[in-house]
Image (cartoon, rainbow, N blue to C red; front, side, top):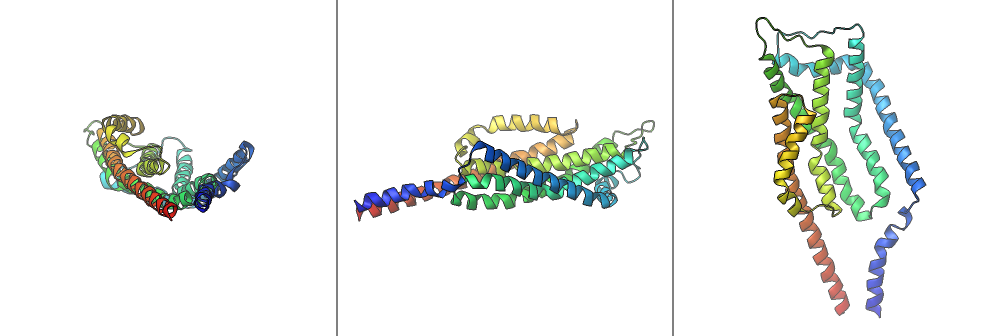
Length: 272
């Protein structure tokens, strides 16, 4: 009888743990609106802040171009082009700086529906998200963008010179930086899906060939039509896919060990 009560108590703990987290649809929508408003305010405030330093951010983004094409100058072909370029640079800086805050708002929206141990497990991924984002941006800034610019500049002839406008270059640079930063979240996303038991390592292993095709198509779609940018995104994404397989395997091993320990504890308590 005592053993039965112990088992019932253990099965009721997860239900009690979530008892205060259940909410009707309207409350979820209100909470979602709240998180979206906070995220929007963060982006707007950071955009205003970054606009003050737009010229500094602009010079920082020009470094790969100057290294790849030392003698070339950027131009603008419309009176308002430079102003709107500075606005885009400010928005880029706001997204880049505000990414961790937006990720934390997503966590705050999701966290009430998680168990305590799931919330604790979620925190490392919250830390890993900006790290992988910065790693993707750094890869573009240091490797991919200079190589792509060398490729484009090498197509010049005596009669055809590359005259790049400010908005076109910065649009390319900002697109690649943000795209690589988002794509580098692949291990975080797949590991989180494994954490909630929505994906398994066997599925990822069997899906390698489809993943390669999907990565190549995605890289061709999101990057400019040159082989340097496409290969520069496809190769790291596939390596991140392999890293995801290792991470998912570790998650499954920890889950199996925890289940084995729980079953051993339950069997020992029932034998007593």
